[in-house]
Length: 536
Image (cartoon, rainbow, N blue to C red):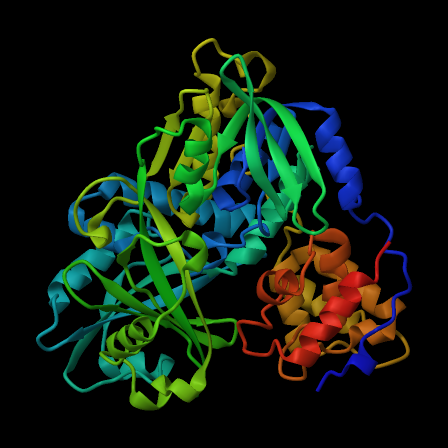
């Protein structure tokens, strides 16, 4: 077990090439007038900042909390075409989702995404028959041009070899299709890095306390640094409100009479230790429209999700006892009891889907992006899916180019002039990176453990070599943060110096998997805080 005495001592000087200090960033933000100020560091705001910087605009991005600190790190961790959308006849949407999914997982971020086989169990008396689901997965794979194989149906016995905890009572057949999964927090952080590499200036833990106006137009924001209380401001020709569940809160800062534009749906998830290895995921139909997932993810099992209207404070969203019971009960349709013991739960989390305003069941509402312009000229954008984050960024940029008066168009490259599949930092074959990490260890001392090498390769890509160099230069940094997790202390130092980590939760929940594994013990937390404080 990690103790405070074993936390590496790094001295007071961060690694070379590290990020500017917060004071330097605040000064930079205060002195310039930006073409675009993006408020909100979820994936929607991050993607827009990335595309805006790529187009040549001067871009600033701020968030009241951490990057991907809310909904964007509380997803089902999937890049998917949306099999259930075929139910509503949204064939074009599924095809577009597949295009984006394959672009991200094959060309933009193959180091951060991985293919996953899904099994759709067909039980006696279930909401769908084998013929219907077989035709559905065939059509689904056809809409991705069969790039992931052909959707088909297999026997229960074959499925159970890949999913040993699959419940086979009354199981008639299993339909098969393929999508991709990711670590959403890591994908978001790499996109922040891409935005910065393109010229954007970013700052997390900086809350908007008010908007700046010039002759009735929104021309910036007043902010407060939550780490030390420093107040500062940012001037911008255009402000984009990308605050997700808080989008209407910021709209009311612009116009106190602004009518609500969205509604919220809560999605809760559970993370459990796995009792046996899984080589495929389960997507179990609950009713005509809803599916519950059981996903092998980060050596654990991710269960969910719920879908219910949420009307409370977005900051208070949490997993309730009713959510936990619902998720376990629904999982029990297709998973044996021993895998669903509450003793196996390591973590639970809930996020808020931002849906267009209107009546009706949230589970049937469209996952579309809503863009509105307020009385003061502030653009607000909300909604959408993780899978299409690049498309959403391009859509917002096209909206900016077409604004009345064309305030930014002459300064930006049109979206069709930019590379369509620009890769995220660290792009590399993760298998090759892991192999190199294993054979290129330090001459004296032990080699890197295989699980650590694999973890670094699939969370950082080629940037994993930077972390390995830190570990080679200071052997204490090569030690595991917790004996039951693959993470090493070099990742904490790297998160501090290169990934905008300010708090222990930034590191434990989003830069690493320690919280999700249930391993963010008091000792680990104190050790991380000690390392974070060890900077200029």
